[in-house]
Length: 314
Image (tube, rainbow, N blue to C red; front, top):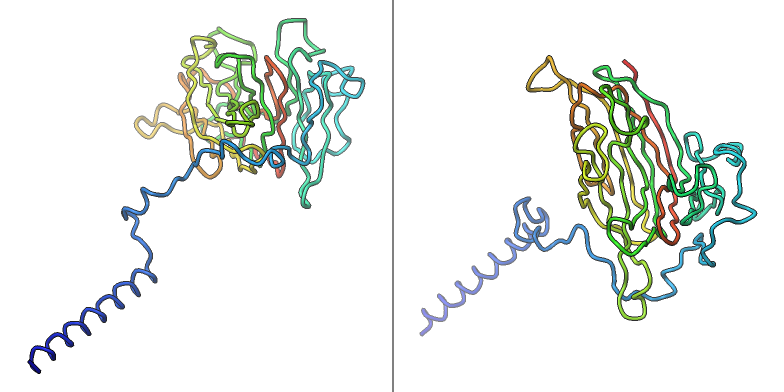
């Protein structure tokens, strides 16, 4: 009996020592890269479908009635109502009479304010081009090694809702560039980053609580309408500060040094979305615009901060 008790005690002590050693190592090293725990982490969680109503209104949000034009928002030309030294980089292109570009400071950070409403384009012919307040940036040529790169942080408070997927959404940024061989717009968009509304539930069923970010990409140079594809990238919550990087340029094709690639690479909230533009040999330039563009129904409110732009010209 004494021998059995001794064996039992020794077995218990060994088990305890093993457990202590195991959990001690696990605590120090953490789970490995291929650990099953990684599958349990939701890197892009859905928004709370029924948040506290008070949390839905941002400090700098325009929650008033949606109108077309206001005395404060009218501007004689596209560039006449910019601030003297705006914190956001680039040249203003204001085609909305609802509100002019302004700035607001929140927690020590200054944000550029871009608010537009449906039908508020007072610069172009009626029923032609969509309202916008955007900033244009310097253009890079098509030589291998030439590129443009924009960085910033954005917050989305509201986007257009016109009642159908094809009409909904507001562009927050776009890659542009002309091409040889004709076709399409004289100043064509190549890839536009479009935010669509995501609504809450219950008492918040009529409130935008998050936004799905899509890439609207050309399938061919000069393509529009059926010549574009719309690809879901990720979801961001309302008023969430999200980092944004967009680089557009030309590089050597690694599979054929006699050819080149026209690339359009975005990083949104730390997640990369790389894409090669069709017909790279036809491309003649790379450029970027950002702000708020397109509102076929309702209102759009986009905020930008920490903006920079770099151009490499070869």
